Length: 187
Image (tube, rainbow, N blue to C red; front, side, top):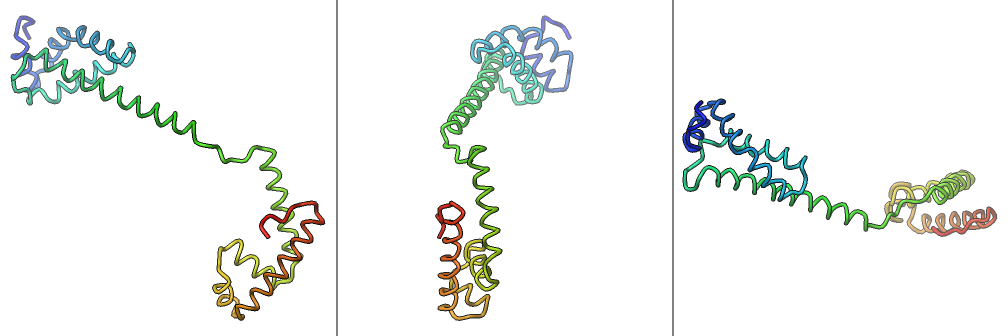
């Protein structure tokens, strides 16, 4: 490919798949595109990457060039679009990171997690001391989120019997938790 060819002729050749024309156009415009991108994104590494993206875009879309502007203008328009897209994505990521940093961390710290683990262990032990009927009602209501009516249907007992079992099971658990030095918060 002759380096003296016009940019428009090079674009037509690129549209036909001529890689030598692509190399010539790249050599001719690479520096300008890189400097333009570097000023926009303020990062040499990003400008290098975007320069490659720009010329890949030219290779893929040379057939779409309509000649309404100079080739150099078209190339810089592609570069500008790519740079602005990159900056927009980076800003969105920064905003997401900033938003995430402001979210409260509801996770328990190590000490609190250990307390919850110990509390869970004690509760399981105390539940094991309840009668089977009381344990079953507590399990269905607290661990399976069933309503009193649902428990009555599942266990096949009257609703008032479920309420009575709940009352006595909670009373016993509260007493045993207090004896273990724990507050019965869920009861």
